[in-house]
Image (cartoon, rainbow, N blue to C red):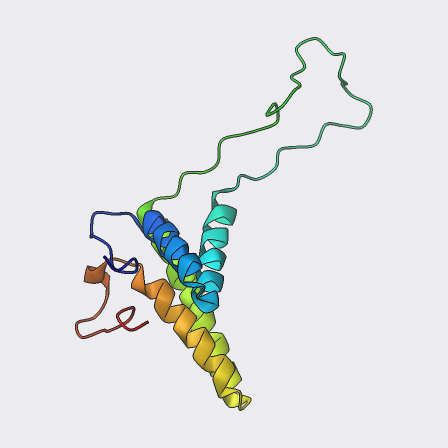
Length: 141
């Protein structure tokens, strides 16, 4: 099974993780870089905003009802919809395409090619029905 084109019922996050595992096994540094970046962007989007800081001098470890210990300050992460995750992956790919155009204008075709490959790898994890007909992204390694 091609890790960049798994079954349509798998979610995008699972596809990204599967593709990352395969890229690590294959020692494909370009794919690893792109996939880790996308997973990091998704992780950042799932993070919650920090709460208000307690005023200086208020509370302490000996206050009744204070919570302490491992995980005491943990809060649940945001749950992103598949559409939001897809939007993040598309934005990551678009950033690479934009940067590739800049590198081409600067005469650095090798860097532009690397960024375009990263963008293609990211788009390849998206569901097939989202790609235009005849789009061959992700098929060639």
